[in-house]
Length: 82
Image 1 (cartoon, helix red, strand yellow):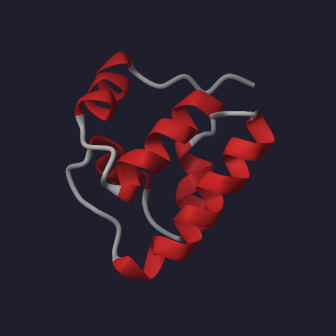
Image 2 (cartoon, rainbow, N blue to C red):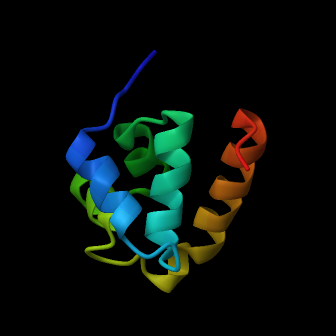
């Protein structure tokens, strides 16, 4: 199934600093074509929060750091993303 991200979101994610964990999460999820709804459900936040993380408009609270890092590692391995 294709979820498709808007060009404006992909562009905003590419422009944002990858130093932000939310932006890094976005880059992996966009490449792996993971739906925003599933990510929001996984972390117990709204879809708008995920969009803001992906664009670097806001950063995830530090309490999410381990879960996000684990998710990035798992998703990269599952989808063979470098």
